[in-house]
Image 1 (cartoon, rainbow, N blue to C red):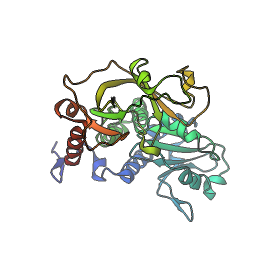
Image 2: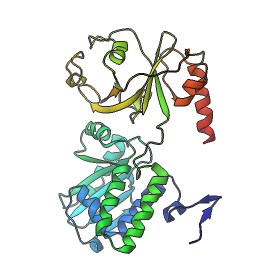
Image 3: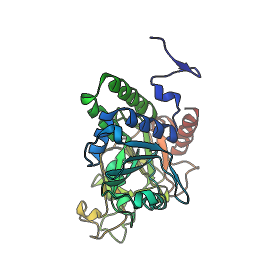
Image 4: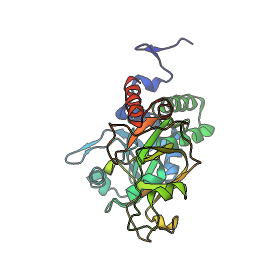
Length: 330
């Protein structure tokens, strides 16, 4: 079979002809759902909806309603089910305002079936998304799915697919792997380190300082972003600096999304709060030479560096600058 080349790049899937932005991903998923009854049934089953006769279902893209904007994907079986999907390429979730517009669409609001779903697909892990979306008051239940989970649904549907469907689903999986790394379950930022400044103070809601939380408990916590510039996805590595230099780097063994940290850390006051990531850290490691902060990082500024740069550069500032230059080249 001949290779297909576009702009000097070999295409691995027909879906790559569309492109790689958010609308292209949405269109690819919509097309696959419309063309593969097995995939459609598996997707609806994931949402807790009964399998249906695929030829009666309508899969719609970019449906407009005045004052309510465009939806990404709608799946409708008149009188029986109605699903609105909002898909994001990155880890950021849609705003409450955007989802409220969808929930207030006349066709969705007045649909006679009780089998209605608002679904959000993103690269945010499902636990984190579920906690954040649960805070969107007045919308009811919203189902979060990661692109990795969508890929898993597609793989599961293969066993009940025709040969033609298998080819289509295989193309979709290849496309998702290329665009988001979701099909392979791989992190695209696995060599990046999130570098934070630790204070010596003990916050008023805790009996343990931030430094001791890391060094004695091997844990760390922070609000779930994007507000305040915090991550919306747990990093693979965390590094900590204080005393004017890098102190330690840790692999993140596990991360939980919590709205009451005291359930895992008795040192913290027992009260509800906004969603936080709680990290469980691996053993510390560091370069065999001192790495001062440098002159371009101020006070509590948080930066992201490629792991190797923290070992090869003389300062964290230099590692940060080199990492940004590499990312721009890529």
